[in-house]
Image 1 (cartoon, one colour):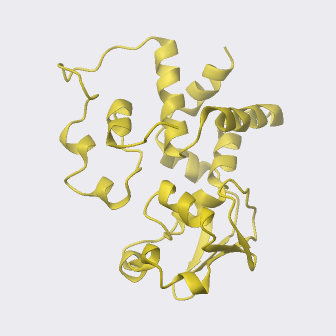
Image 2: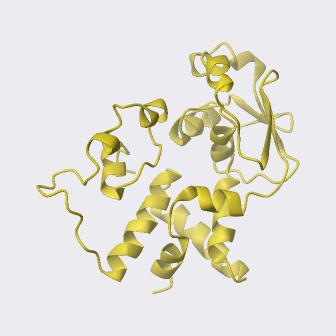
Length: 207
């Protein structure tokens, strides 16, 4: 995948929280320059239906830091499950990825950082080390930071970050033990938090 940086958010005209704490600071380029890079005019260009669908698809894909092929597989699985809300099914699968759960528990400042933490073997799931960021988790799964990894630079600011952070309601976090648990399926709450038109994403792949 090409380098994901602040320009990605500016093209999307939305914060995708790809750079951790910087996204919440006054230095965030989306706050300072809320228009696409390289544009002489700050007035947004009117997009066609296809353009809008493509934009929403790209936003969702970049939000979770995914390449096109695996992202498409998630969409196909969501569509295969059927139901009246395919977007909700897609959200559940994306939110249940291990790297996303690590991020949502506050163990990492961004999804890209969470992906790296998992890949380097710093995370346990149900007491066993795993290094697969895309691993699908389910209700009852317990996620913890490997004790030997707590002294690593990745986790040196956890106490400070935890003071001002609480996870979404579908997760339970024990800040003292550096452990979390999935207590229910991520659904409407996670979907509404995305700020992305999921129907447009599904329509893009249904063309």
